[in-house]
Image (tube, rainbow, N blue to C red; front, side, top):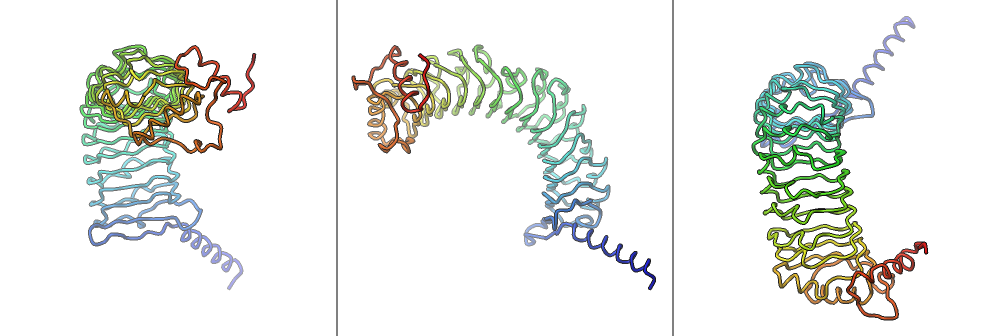
Length: 427
């Protein structure tokens, strides 16, 4: 055989072996109830998904191609999957999905395209039954008007971690997808979003605005139509204050409000009063130095309050009277004392603590001793890892008594910073 033919044959064989090696391995699982196909990569090579690997099977109900190193999807790759209801092609390297590539799968109700490299998409004309759509972790910059219009049954939409700008999103983009009850814009820039962005939604339950570069509570998150909202997440933004008592007035059914890791310094005492059904409020990691004495008073549904990792120097038991408080987190603040019989006072007002975290504060030793006696008496869980007598956890002066007055705070905080934290205090 001529050398050139041998070389050519070897070259073709090598190409064939590489191609076969890179093809994902697919297995059928759970055959007794449904036809599930799950594919996994066979090596570290990128793969061009073509017709033949998973196509042309009318028995397939669920198809998972997660993390298969797919970089391209050919037009007929999903041909003749008429029974398919669940499609997951997340965690791949897909930068483009050709128009029509997902057509024909009319029964699909779950579509996961997350963590690819998509910059745009226009794929939903043939998806009348889609109710779950995950587009998170892509590079999408723009949402074309009417893109979601065919998705009249859509309930769950994740747009988080893209390159969206709220000011560029058309306010009528959800006009036909009115049944959405979960939506996430987390890790996008949602500043200057139109006030009526979500005004068409009739049953929104969860709205996630974590890490959206917000400097204030956005109007589109508190509209009149959002009385259905149960969970509002606005954590890790740049909100500095909550000084408008009407901010949350429309959210009468809200259960959970997460404002953690903003830079909130002040809160109007009536800010949360309209939230009659609020159960959980998270203000962890802000810049609060104090809270109004009546901030949560008589909010009967409130059971979980997280005020940890702030700069609170004193706090009144009055702030929690009339609640259903069970879990209270005051850890990592600047508190040196609490009201005498703090836990008992809460019990007398209807709040029965089951968990109470107060560690990492510059406690006066006598005041801390009082708290520990109370939590043990009432069998309240607390973080006592450092309370073993081997670690410095509080400070005292020659007058070893609990001084419950703010005029003494600076004395004990300076002692704590210097003796416990080892900080150099300027004099």
